[in-house]
Picture 1 (cartoon, rainbow, N blue to C red):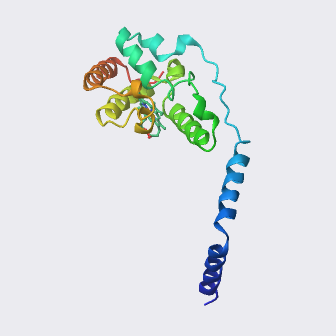
Picture 2: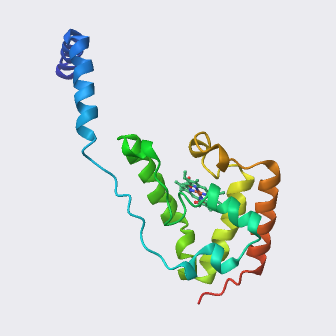
Picture 3: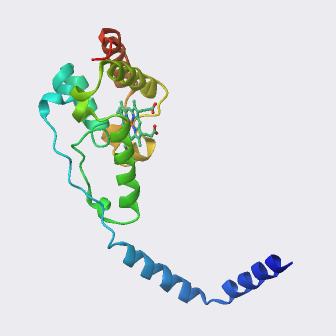
Length: 170
Ligand code: HEC
């Protein structure tokens, strides 16, 4: 079969390439991709639409949200030094984009009532299931890790807010 012999030949060729050359190629690629920078400008947003401003949670809850969720789910992301290094930077930016799309606390005031209620429900579910904040984040940001106590505090508060939230669309 033509395809099988082709693959075999390619494999032989790859084996023949000197390991040093491979390493060199890898380094060159790693350097080259540094030119592709991520956009770190935080979109502007009105503080009057911010989740914490609108719902005015107790100070402790506000502070947990800011520490454990806002880096991804708001327009107030902070970018530590390692976000300068590709491809880690791409991966982090991807998380931020995806997270903002799902739930952006900075534009909470623009959400419809129905969406607000749904997002509040998702929030306590995600925390209950231990899915949020993302583990890949809390490994580096220890301060964002939720204690059992903090989890309970957040879950109870999100549940109460969800109960209060009207679901009629605006
Ligand atoms: C490191 C970034 C990061 C942090 C920190 C983070 N999230 Fe997320 N979150 C994401 C990403 C990425 C998604 C979308 C993909 C997914 O669902 O896994 C998401 C999705 C969600 C969703 C939508 C889930 C669904 O059903 O689709 C909710 C709700 C949520 N996060 C709540 C939170 C809350 C509350 C916190 C803080 C306790 C938090 N997140 C912290 C990255 C993050």
